[in-house]
Length: 311
Image 1 (cartoon, rainbow, N blue to C red):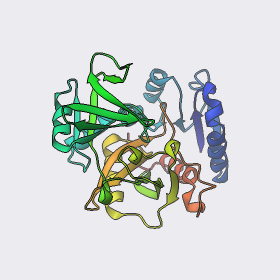
Image 2 (cartoon, rainbow, N blue to C red; image 1 turned 90 degrees about the horizontal axis):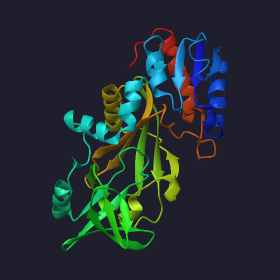
Image 3 (tube, helix red, strand yellow; image 1 turned 45 degrees about the vertical axis):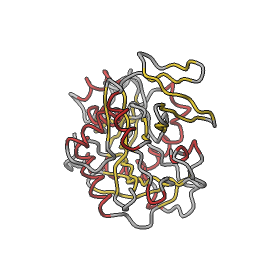
Image 4 (cartoon, rainbow, N blue to C red; image 1 turned 90 degrees about the vertical axis):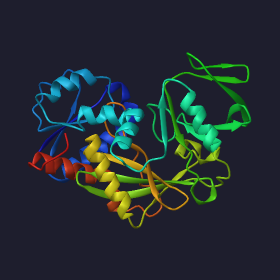
C-alpha cells in the first residue's frame, strides 16, 4: 500500500506532528508513505492521495480525475461551506437547529422577534470560531464581546462604527439551543471512518452561565473528554450526514436540546481547508481506541484493498 500525503509545505509548522503520526501508522501496517507537493503529485506512483491543508484545490480536482483522492474534493467543499452543509441537512430532514440563510436581514429579525436570542454563525469557520449571540432588546438588536455590548446594524460590509457593529450578508443564523439549563456546556463529536463511528468525544466548558459562554471551543476554555458509550442516534445521524456530504474520514458535532434530543450543528473533514483536531494523548482516559490516525489509516488500507467508499 502506497499512500501519498499531500499538503502545502508552508503549513508544515501546523502539520508536522500530524504528518509524522500518519507516517508511523502507515508503517505499522506495512505500508509506504510519500510526502507530496504540487511538483511531485503527478509523478509519484501511489495508490491513494490523502489531502491535508493546502492551496491547490484546482490542481487536486485535476488529479482526482486520474487518481483516488480522500476526502473527495466535493466533500471537502461542502464541509467547509457551513451554509451548504446546513442546506443539505434541511433538505434531507436532518435534525438541526432552526436555521435562517438570507441575503437580507428580515428573516433574522423575525427569528429574534420569535425567540429573543439567536446564534449568528460564521459561514466558513469551525468549532464555534466567529460565532456571535444576537439578542433582541426592545427595538434594538445587540451582541456582547469581551464584556462590551454593541448595537447591531445591517449593511453592505462588515465594520465597527463606534459602538455599532454593522453586519453584511449573507446572514447565517440559527436558533440558540440552550439545553436543559438554557445554556449549553458541551458539544458531542462523532468520529467517522468509512461506515463506522470509531470514537466519540465531548468538548466541555466549565462555568457556562450565559448564552455567550455557550460558544464552546478549546480557544474559549473548553476541554475534551472521551465518551465511554456512543449514543446510537448520534451514530446513525453522523453516518447519514457523512453519506450526504460524501466524506470518508471526518467528524459530526451535536448539541442536545431541552428534551435531550440530539441536533447536528456542524460537520468537518480533513482536506485543503482544515484538519480535524485529534491530538488526545494528554487527555484523561486516552487509550488505543482513541487514536483517530490509526482508524484513519486502517480505513485508507481498506479503500486501497477495494472497499467501497464515498466519492
